[in-house]
Length: 342
Ligand code: LMR
Image (cartoon, helix red, strand yellow):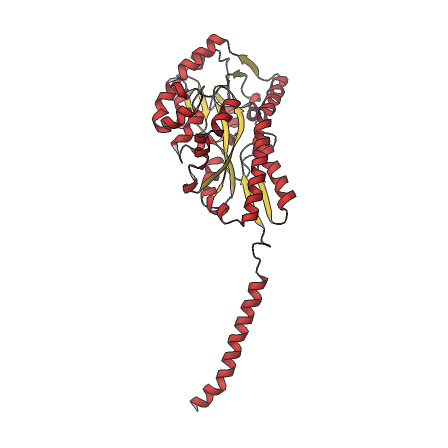
């Protein structure tokens, strides 16, 4: 009986196995392979669309649409609307977002070597920064946190930073006792302490409110950020100090990048190179334009420094270099124009 049943059952089992195999085959052939899959790149950032970073992100989205439309989609979330910088560093590491352009200051927690970008008066202008970034050492920095999940694709400029305050800051001694918002960076903290002032680390999106309520007295930022965040409404004086550099590491999640199909990755690399060159060529002009717009409002007064006052600012902040030189490394210091003689 049993044997009879088994005999009877066997063809049905074979048929069932065939059916499962055919079903799997159909499923596999219907599943989107890399040719059909749309790769989504979520790119959150904190500045306004009009800033160098905002314009760069939008240009990147456009070029990807033009050249890789249907295969890659870039979603831009400007003005901290999705998350702040601290959260986006974490989100990139976990693969929740795929691309970021966070200020170099905030990468100090991943490698102390990035602190070089925050040293006050180390770089005179964007040209000097650019030469350093294009050097062998600069390119080494770009890849230095690759094994931590952050693959640097390029350096994007914003511009040189200016101090905003409730009083004119001519000499650094004028800043004594004032509380300044800074990015989350130990070098910037040391810089404010060197001025005998009080540093307050704070997210970018909270600065306007903090200035307005008097929770802080002043802040440091570029003209494009002062303009687009409307800081000029709540800080009566802006000292044109050009004391530090603000720029970004355009980074992707290493794993995400490596698993992209080769042809897509190659095209994206070409787009990134093109956009990086555009952003960096336009950044200074955007900042100058925004400076004019700020001053035209008449709400903030421009404080220009005499050569003598500038010398005092440099001298007061110079010890910060020595404080961080060991952590940054001699090779990196020596690769900057001014650091050669430190
Ligand atoms: C800041 O926090 O002041 C800057 O990092 C904002 C930015 O991204 O330019």
